[in-house]
Length: 119
Length: 113
Image (cartoon, each protein chain N blue to C red):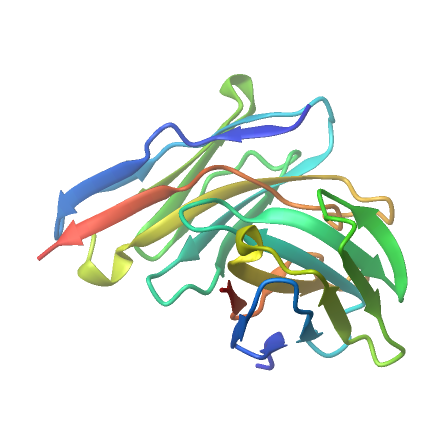
């Protein structure tokens, strides 16, 4: 069965602190895709990153970085030097390979982590 | 860049009424997904369409139906509305031939009174 666990329900940090959001997943498939989405208070879901199961290379995009480790089934997200605008709910999601190939299958979301960045 | 368009953005209905939510995918995207997000919850998959055919079905109530039209837009029809249907409904789209990442629309907030 597919499952995504985000054990941290809420995290509160002060601006400029680094923060890591944890994500642990379960799947029986050898081909799968992992995602992070951001949901700010305005409510929309903003795509941040996608990783496929064959690519364990870590990625850095500005203040954001992601650490994918298949050995521990984890896909953690770090924000460096956090800012108030980073305050949002962050969802980790899993998609198994779709019937038509690629990540066209439904997304299974974790329960989300609410990040509050205080000025 | 063009994004997924959803209408209406807000909808208020009475119990037992019907509602229709519309979704216009990103141009050249061939797959549409519908998700329901209750207050304080994560989005839950309802149904998806690929090239106008239903491709997958999640925990969608029998009172709900959906379809994808020839221009690839999709509509989610909800009948006999219940208080528990109050939620944020997201549509997402992706392209199997280009980028199969799901991009989400802004959502339709449905309130059932």
